[in-house]
Image 1: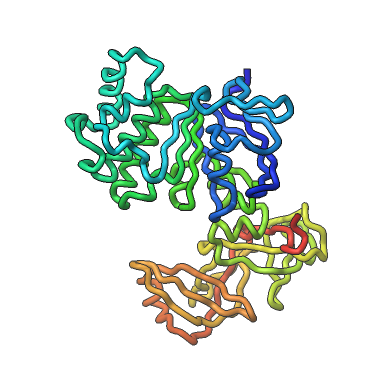
Image 2: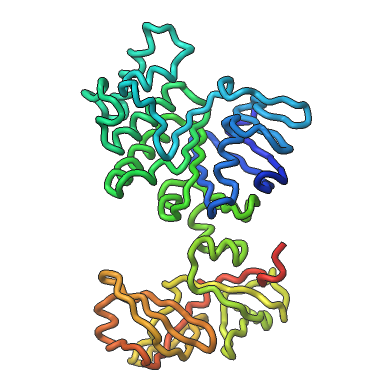
Length: 366
């Protein structure tokens, strides 16, 4: 029997959708993308709130939706726990009764006892009789999570669950979610627009745009090797440029950019002469020491000019002009002071070739 959630869906309206995903028990899969990319439509499809499209949804071996056989289990027959952005608590019910309302399949005498245990599990002892308006945002969200889990669901769906609370509360809820996932061992699908949140909480991230899944990978894999320029942009990569792969040498590949020749880790999947997009993280752009330290084989010396310096606490974000492109470099404040960095200043920087990642050119992406 297949474990976890397996989904394949296609539709043309109201939002075009072409998605295939799997979420294993105990795994957090984050759906990340701009507004209108299909994240919430996928979540609602899993919950049975959007029974449209061609495809199949299966959870722990039970088919919830199959367009080919016209099977569609109603929401109440899918063991789904769902937590919404705005909590969706019943305003006239106490915290205890909100949680008990999720357990209609239990005898009435047992519901409040189970609800009491779930509230205690979410650190809400003593608040059982308060109405939602008498609770803080974080407390309301804990009640919502307790209610979702009180149904003993087979999957937990989180729709922007932390966006309505302040940062301190959000971080506390992150910690509690991490504890819960270890204990409950169920698939967790998280919809979020916050990349930091997805990177922190998710085992894998699913990058969506216009209803299509562009790439699914761990946060580290995505940041190290985005599959396309579109994914790199969604991840907020600043150093993303067009170039031409000149060819391959015995221990490296050679990239042409802005009249400069860059030596990078071998990219044998790319053909010589191919137009490419390439990216380098901020950590891959480094000030060249004024002491004339010899460069390593994949450290490429580049002439630039400082165009702007932004102070971000103890780090400075430095914009560097190279031809028609702008590199972004992050520099500790004390290093910037030692080099007396200023706008208009010419500089030599080095690009760490082993951190440069090459992708198909934008015009060749499907």
